[in-house]
Length: 108
Length: 112
Image: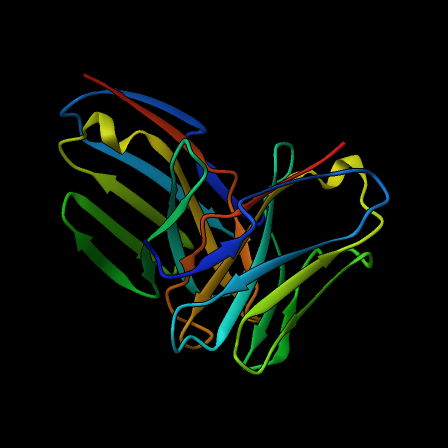
């Protein structure tokens, strides 16, 4: 079993839909990152969370430390949101452990 | 633009060869991380340096080594290359250890 599990693996949506991507982890962490990888391969760090909730534009990330679970929400999705979204946790030994990613496609 | 620069962007080399990938972190960032992303393995953490010293080690093969220089740039050395080493290699930097990391665009290594 992977230490970081993401769901769903693949997600398709119509433009404007509300999207949720989930991440569960089984190790002790000091922080959790949400990353976005575009089709060209480049990786952008979206959020780093250690508690609560963060919002940036149409993106919202939440984390529940007790339940070892985080969610990434995209409101009013747009085709340019199409990418792979990766959850990564920073372990107590400062290693980043990655989920396998969620491939999102948003159609106009 | 994240401010992290990786060179080269693409590299094609033969099995058995040795290559060096270079990473220049954002100005002032002390931590540098190296990751490998292959088609079948996803993103894997290789190694972290903090202010010139090795801080954490992940799934890095013995054929691979890295270092961080006094000017904080880092190099990842891959030797005795195998076909399975073909992957995207990312470098990321952060100001301290548990902070947001900024990724470079990656070096795509193809071993033929």
